[in-house]
Image (cartoon, rainbow, N blue to C red; front, side, top):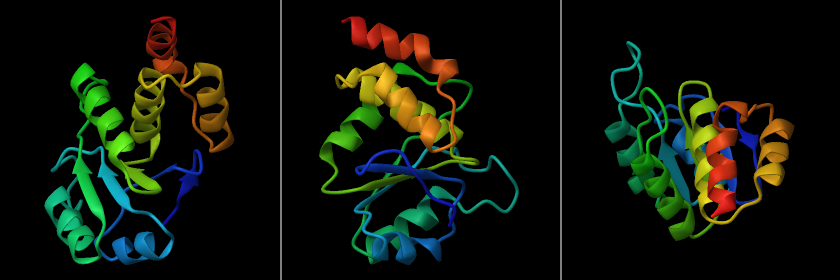
Length: 141
């Protein structure tokens, strides 16, 4: 797995396989979040396959697919998932970018500082520029 750590509580990665779930558990993750819709690419494991492996490994699992932009519903679901996690979370999508963008907006919605979140994402190799206005809007509330 190619995992990028955003914070001590959250990491992202490209698509994982069912076999990667045990490695996630061994690495200390307590929840896996799939931000990919099923059937996006041929041969991609479906969320239910990852969920079954997560359950067998004692990990929580959430499927919060992001298609065509980040919706308010996805932000709320991600914020709730992050808040309910009992330890570090691994979120994945095709490349890790959608997961990072959704994480950044969700964390801003929970009171996170947009600049600090942007720096954490950049340190992990991701640019939150596309969602920075949404992050700033949450911070202004």
